[in-house]
Image (cartoon, rainbow, N blue to C red):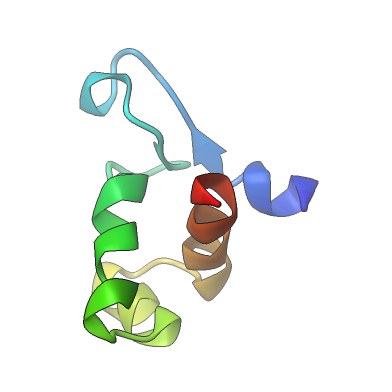
Amino acid sequence: MEELLNRITINSRVMASKPVIRGTRITIDLILEFPATGVKPKEIAEDYKIAVEDVRANTIVRG
């Protein structure tokens, strides 16, 4: 679980301190909108050129 959480970062200089996927400007809020619409984690990862593990880390952080 800690490995997944290390994929998330908060930086006051990036996206107004919103949690993002480390090394990107992709916010957790953005990623979490998709599963509610039926989009699969693999599709999200492909669309945003991130790892599926990044998508999974977002769901863990959000609970």
